[in-house]
Image (tube, rainbow, N blue to C red; front, side, top):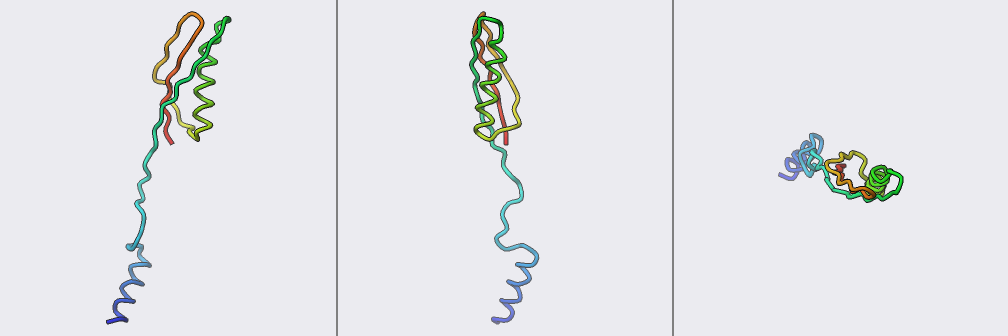
Length: 83
């Protein structure tokens, strides 16, 4: 009985059917808001730079800008990032 159990456990370990983690990796999604202001028309560039820095510091590299709000001297961008 013991030899049979050990043989089954050995075979299962070789085939990887015992305690194997799930192979699918879950994606993590996070949103970042970047703010920028400028008297020279660079507010959108500053806002994108702010959002990009937040994403990089948090470890996200795949980002999409899904919305932006512009006013004469201020900008706000909304980024959705996954990793």
